[in-house]
Structure formats: structure tokens, C-alpha cells
Length: 68
Image (cartoon, rainbow, N blue to C red; front, side):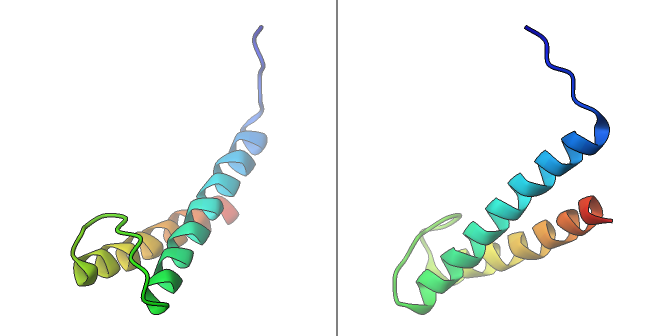
């Protein structure tokens, strides 16, 4: 079975998935604030926090593109 989606629908699906991952990264930072270690990108706490923050900035930029 082939399902065809128009560009607007694809953009909505992509945007929602990006927002979901963005929320997950923000939750990871909250876990660090509560002295938990999700270790997303690194086993080193400070390096992981740095990379999570960079990922958040990148995802916010891309979400902005799909929201325009």
C-alpha cells in the first residue's frame, strides 16, 4: 500500500517529532538540575550538559524553520 502525503502534512509531522525531541532534551536538563544523570551524549556531566544545550539551540532553530 502506498500512502501519499502533501508537503504541508509532511512538514507538520516533522515539526511535531522535532518538538517532541526538543522537549526531551529540556527534560534531560531538568534531570541534571535534580542531581540525576541522563548521560545523553557523554558520561561526563559537564560535557553532557553542554552538548544538550547545543542540541536544544539547534532544534529550536530547525523547529523555527518548520513553524514559519
